[in-house]
Amino acid sequence: MSIRDRINHALDGDKVIKPVYLVYDWFVINRKIDWQSMFDLGLGQINHASLIEIERPNLKIEETVTDDGKVKSKEIRWITEIGELQELSIDGWVQEHLIKTPNDYKIMQRALEDVRFVPTNKYFDKSEQELGDSGVTVGQLGQFNDLGYLRTPFQVIQIDFAGLEQFSMDIVMEIPELLELIERMNEQMIELFSCLNKSKAKHIKLWENLSIDTMGPDMYRKYLTPLYRRITNILDETGKKLHVHYDGNLQLIADDISKLDIYGLDSLTPPPEGDMSIAEARKHWPEKFFWMHPSLSWDELSDTEVVDNILQMIQGAENRFCLQLSEEVPPNWKRTLPLILETLDKFSQ
Image 1: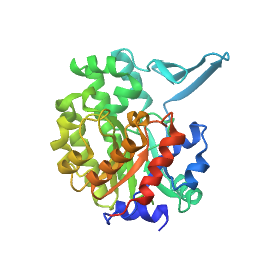
Image 2 (image 1 turned 90 degrees about the vertical axis):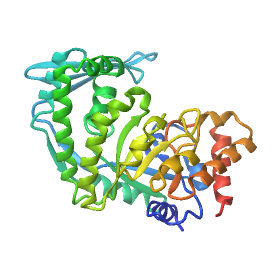
Image 3 (image 1 turned 180 degrees about the vertical axis):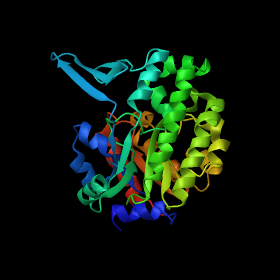
Image 4 (image 1 turned 180 degrees about the horizontal axis):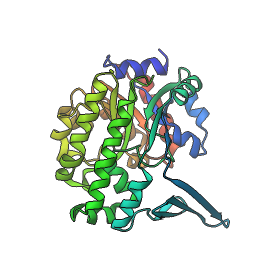
């Protein structure tokens, strides 16, 4: 079977005979390594295609990029008639987030008012045509550089708009402007998912980037669990499946996750990045699909140790899984990637 057939069979719950290893499209675009040689060895690709186009009538975005050959800085201004927000990044790392004060939450709410979501299959169709049988396309809610809807609102504000430190103080103090923004964006997300009934994508991903350390179980249950339930109720009517990018510690909310109709856990990573083995994860979540990311720490292990760890992941997952290169390309990729692909090629169950 082709890579596409093998991953689709796995996603449908069929027995995994020959495991698939997929690389994020982002890495293929942004990491200058010999990808073709890896594809020739059996590596597949997972693409992410926006299922919507977003119209923001109350917002103007201006970007200024400066590159002196040593440092590349980018300034982004979100401009509304009630005020402006500014973000500054240096060499891709955010130094100054858009939201810094309670009033900034009001400006952000104005920026996102009257937003119009236009469903589209054009990005999905283009991706599928380019991939052919070498991978699969998963839907997402906007382009990669399009802040606002790629994650649930709680995490969009935490990660993209305010930053972890500012957000943590504001959410604990229950700043009214923040709570109002979360509520408004939650309703927009429900509106967004409701307009995807004609999308060709069967699988839809939220880029949660979640490790429970960053919010705690109580916040998870208060702000994320109810929204997940509303989203999956909508998707259940169309047969579409929700996948969430959970790449860190999850033990504290393992029981909570088991009660949600989330279909797949993306970038699920064993220790030391995560806090449970794949076998432990499978005991908690027998029916969920695992997009498994081999630990980057294994890049320094011997060939025998790498192979043993990969086999433990596969055997622990049992079924409903694939492997992913989804967090970073390991420095020793010339050794480890072919080794993993060779191990998968020889494996049968």
